[in-house]
Image 1 (spheres, rainbow, N blue to C red):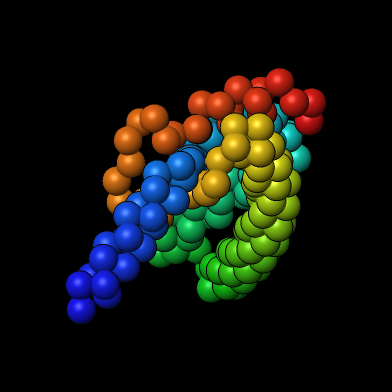
Image 2: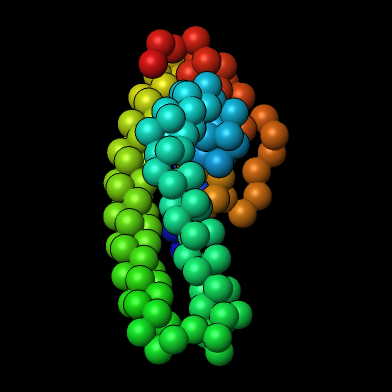
Length: 167
């Protein structure tokens, strides 16, 4: 029995020594995405690509709202045929607006996902390089970590390295 206890304690001691050299890093992906220049450039490209369509939809929405107000305000003084024509026009504009809005949402979602995917691949590539250079055994994302010491956080290293990378 004493031999088993001694063997168990020996294995336990050996296991603790093996884990003592474990080097762990933690990355806050949200912070990296906020601070990286690649994300700022992606936002500018996004605004350039979809800003005009967004403004057109905004104008379209204001026109629809103005038409609706006109119908509500002047309905009692309009002839039935004029009122019906305005209501049809209103309904057509609302349908066209909703369709254009849905198309814009779909296009922006596709574009946003593509851009975010590129940036995330760059982040992973940089993080892997830091892990290899720094001889890390394990890298984790901060959203899956309950607690960490600041010494394990390599977020700023990732941001610095990304800042020096060409897009």
